Structure formats: C-alpha cells, structure tokens
Length: 220
Image (cartoon, rainbow, N blue to C red; front, side):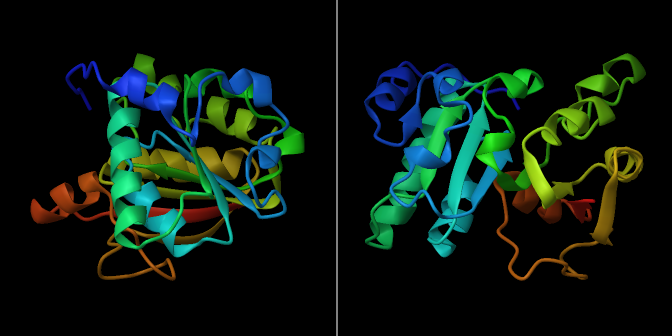
C-alpha cells in the first residue's frame, strides 16, 4: 500500500522508547530488549499502520511483540496508533518493539537464539505476476528463512483477501515442512482464531464483500 511521505515519522521514531533503529545490532538478543525477557516472542511481518499490533499486544501483555515494516511513514503511524490504544487502556507500552527493515533480508536481524514462537503475516502483497511471486512473504524462499529463527512447533498465522495467494501459500507451507493446523476460506463466518483482531485492510475488504482467507501452520 502506497503512503505519502511524513516528515515527522523519522524524528518521532528515533525519539521513541519502543523503536529499534539498528535491528542488526540486536540479532539473537531480541528478548533482552524487553523488560520481561522471559516472555514468548511473536513478530508481525509488514505491520502497516499498526492497528493489528495495537490490539493483539494490548490484549496479550504476557507476550512480547516485534513489528517490522520497511516504510518510515507506516511505522510512524503504527507508533501513534499503538500509543493511542495503550493510553486509552491506561497501560504502559512494555511488550512492543517497532523496527524498520527489508523482510527479504530478515536473517540479518533474527536467528535461532531469538526463539520466535509465532509469525503474523496479514494481507501481504500478493505479487500476482509470475516473475514476482518469489517476493511473496509466504513464498518457499521466505519460509526457509523463517525456519532459521522460528522455534520447533512455532506457528505462522496468515490472513489474506487474495484467493490465489492463499491457495499458493498453503502449498508453499506444506512443501516447506509446515503442518496446516487450521484453515478457512471465510474467516468471519468460520472462525479459526480464539479472537480475531481485524486489520484496516480486513475491514475494508470485508466491507466490499470479499471473504477473508486465513490459516495457522506449525513448523514440524
């Protein structure tokens, strides 16, 4: 999703207590960046404006979260949305970290010592053209990278509006050694999550009458 440049985003991020500006320097040490380092670590790849992260992290204070995106403007909006949600709940932000990085190069910032237990991929770019499909966040090339820092029995939670991306992602996951635990082609009428935290895209696509596809896959 394209977004206009926001000159305030970079200064606000650099001043934020929950933003990591040089994530490569904390590779293998992500848990230590949190006040409660003993808590499980979950990550969101492509956090966008942060609506999902603001909800899921606030509802699960016993889990630490890292939200990754490549665009300063997105991360700036995510920061503000998270702050607003936590302020409204009168809760201090202790279990979220934001960082800017290219997910295609994610092994430069995460490794097995980080012991990630869950990866969220919400409404990623479907890259429909054949020559671009390797850029998909769910492509086998990327899944092999995730396996380098995802714990055994760790999970990937995927949501998308795109039928072809979803069908291909199920194949990618199984070919890469993941077990599909749950799947649905209509999430809002066939829930597979204990609680579904809707993203901005999810609300938009649902309003257009597009079914939301979702799955949970476990690393064997």
